[in-house]
Length: 86
Image (cartoon, rainbow, N blue to C red; front, side, top):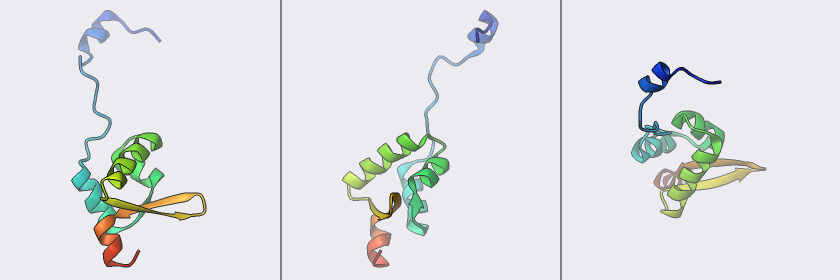
C-alpha cells in the first residue's frame, strides 16, 4: 500500500538490524538449555531461516552442537554440552 511522502520522509534511511542479540547472549542462553531452531528464532526475534544460518555459523566455529529428535534439531552451547555429556 502506498504511503505519503511525509510518512516516507519520517522513515529511517538505514535498514534495521534483524537481531540485536549478540552471539555471547545467544551462547549464554544455549548454555542453560537446548533449544530448537524455532525457539532460537523467537529468542533472536528473527525468522527461522535466519536463526538457522546463525546457528550454522556457530556450529562451523565449534561453539554450538546440534542433536536431532526425529526431524527436530536441538542446539546447545558446545562447552555446556560436553560438560553434561549431551
